[in-house]
Image (tube, rainbow, N blue to C red; front, side, top):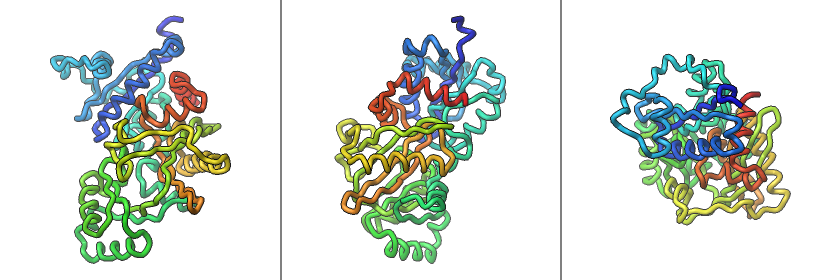
Length: 349
């Protein structure tokens, strides 16, 4: 087959998010999978790097980022004029490997949509709802999906003593300590604090406010942390259920990306009934927020009460060598290179 007849896959990575480095690792995995023998005959991969300032770079420089052979002398010359993005006629399918704001919140998805080319993952609505934890949980509530008690506030509320007093009363009434304070629009456990007291709660609000105007406070559940992958659009499938175990007090950024501090068990040791319920809930959660293509749905499972809680839907989960999403599907019988090909074919729907 001639190169010109192969669909060109634009692997977009990096970005202005605090998850920039994780994005590069995800892109390396996907780029390697696209260059695997089984995919090399089908697709032509083109990496597109977005630096921390938001500038887009050409294929040559972008590939040097993935191979760790970047030449800073050509950095300025390799920028792509964003206004010409729609004229990149050689790109047939966009494959975003972007995590966090501007990457999985609907912003880049809207840009891809404007080019008229298909792209991997959810559209603008599903991405936006999946990114904003407050909006996502509001939708879950309207669909009567099980989740932990939570309250939300804005950064500006932090300066209002009267409002903060009412928040303190709500915590004592419906959440209690310990609780988690999170930026509404971020991932990879960035900006999250676990508070055991009012003082730690106030400090946690200050930390979260550094990352986002919107903040969510959730009840801490003593339970197992389980995850399930979702794949497909017209027909959605769920993977086997995996479990995350960690040595830290909770699943921090450090433990998430340090093999010595956490481990995954795939499949999780669960009875069939519980596993099936989680798999079904994963698809229900995705459908509720209009997420499709790929997603990882995180759960808490409290064995003492047999209660399952949906934590969140991640519409562009990590794709590193140790990330849960690809390993969940590998355990389900879908190897990495086939998973990547399946995501591209789903995008064409």
